[in-house]
Length: 593
Image (cartoon, rainbow, N blue to C red; front, side, top):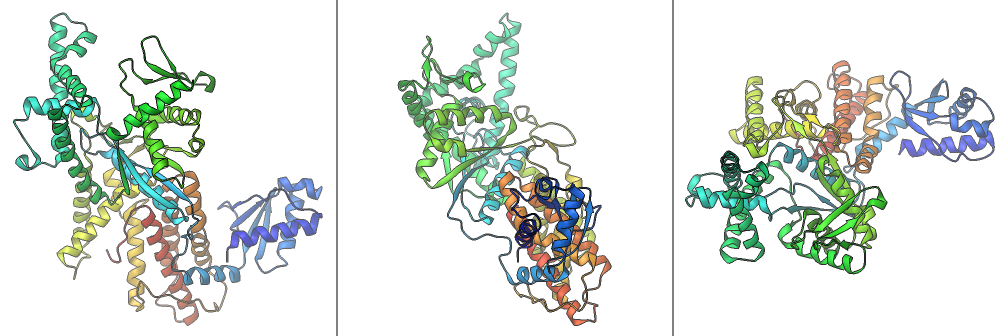
């Protein structure tokens, strides 16, 4: 029983019965917590039909709805009609919810979507910013899957360009043949080490050249290690065998390291795209656009697009020497993906908000090239993550490493779990699995609960707390419910039935059922807004509502069989929805902790 749909239908019927014609739009919203009720009808737009003031209009509709079985009572606040749904209706909602093991998840719609996330450079390990990126992209993909889409998770690996050549140059100069095996380092960390070494040597050489009389600009171009990196890039583009072999070797080290990090993050990809494969297609498309007059060539031979008519500026697509820019390869990548997956409705790019202008330009260019699907592309823009100690600075070697942060979170979770002393009877493997779930759950939840568009401060100590707006608080609520169900001899897979309730629902019981009824619409809203924060905050609110109920109303101690059965049923439904909601966020919930 979908309360929202049924209520809308009854309101529409009431408006026709009272005022003789249908309303163009019915505006229903959640009731403000200050007032009694669960749904509020905004009556101001309906005064044109009623020919009366908003309060009188609201009163008339409220009285009409109260004659049925759905609405039990109402109150009017100015032009807002606050409606209380009958306990009978809420119990029917609970009956259907309990009977549906896939509650909240929609059947297949036949629609397809592509979500890109991660997309790292191959010159350094993944860091805190990548964690937010991966968790966001993965969660958006899972939310769309829950709403009936087939979702293709992909990433574009920035495996070419001057950045990897810098690491290659430093390794040639300082590496002495060092490998991940000989050093005992993860491959991505080893390559990142030489990226930092490049930066140190480069700054030192620039300083020496400036001291010798060069200008800053001259010194930056003439520094020997930079010239070496540029030479490596030119050799790579010319397909020099030794250069390409070294490039493949060092990138291979990085990919192996990335894979280990992704496994611990709990994210996956259906297909990987590489810039080294897509940039040539982008160049072909630019040349086609030049031939058709979409782009133009300047006197120095560079190719540009003029977007001044769209309120932007001119953008270079091919340099004077014919080499491509990031925009060029992104054009090629977008086109290739639609060729690979022709049924997708659009692409979602999970990329930091510093690239907002880039994606505006990209989508405009694709549209000018005649690709209608460009309008269905979306930039999932997100803000930077700061720690209490300040901003990350990757080229100075002070990056907040993703592996180190995940390990720290799991270590803190292990210490907290040991301090609570609730692991009696658990094996070492079970304890390790539990602390991994709590530590990574705390990290993921804290990064996902904030609206993606907002810059955020990640506080590791706050995130791991069992109290407050945290993942462990939600996980503990789930474990508490599962523990209670075990005492009642109910297993995870058992389905319960809701019999006739012997008396009216308690307000705290009703609050939980109302919250449970909102889960499908919250998933849909999160998909529509590309915001896992909507699901994260919903699950937290559900856990809060349940804990208020649990602390005030008996469940196992209830002697009335009807009440006990109903409370067990909606306790289990709460645990199931918490598990489902956290799952789409990529977070596990334990059965005990």
